Length: 320
Image (cartoon, rainbow, N blue to C red; front, side, top):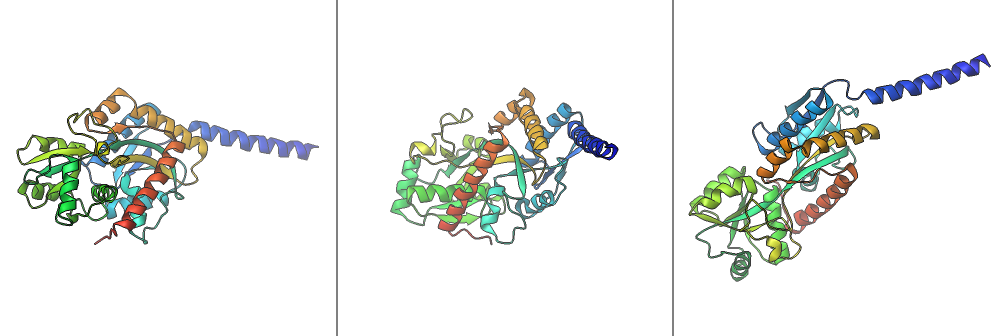
């Protein structure tokens, strides 16, 4: 009997200890890994949310930039990190794209991660050079149909979110245009202003300052509805029903992170995102704030992966 009592006491002690450890989370600083350089969009969003998260949980949240390979280096690092909730990943929409562009990506974007929350989505504006005789989406489509392959569009590089957004638009509109890839949006913008290319899809923060120029104009936005930041720019969906594209940012944890920790992190992140100190900044930067549950974010991710995989195949998008 004494032996049975001792065994039962041991089981109860183990259960109590496990519960106590779970209740103590977080007991030390957290790390948020970013795959892109400091001062960029991902860095700004990651630090903004992380700073507020730190205030809420009473622990430091250290942001680390592990750059390279379109975020793959940082993402792989987190995939191989301990699933204890102390190492998190915040990535843009390339997370749903990279595996369809390359067979050498060393992780699975779904199986190797736990979804925490989608911060928000960032629509793009189709910014057209004034030399192009198209003041509306319908006119751009008509021009492309009349001159197949002669209309040129720039992007931040092969497989970038703005290239794929245009490829989706072209597929849905039944038109053919010529892609001119750049090493980032900045040189693409320079050539757009110089008249070397006809148009570029740009995230709202990059597009809005250009719309005051006498060299370019905005003809459509990639969100389902117009943005309050650019109310005079129609949604592309008004001309191409069902069209929607854009970039996004979301938080992940390594696969097999305990469910209670996933839920706790998701709750705290959503709380941080929805505070006025964070949400107002995001909205001013053109982010449509979402802050959804792990399950909702997981469903969103699957749709994104499938959507862009089909476009990559249809448009024969290749890394150069």
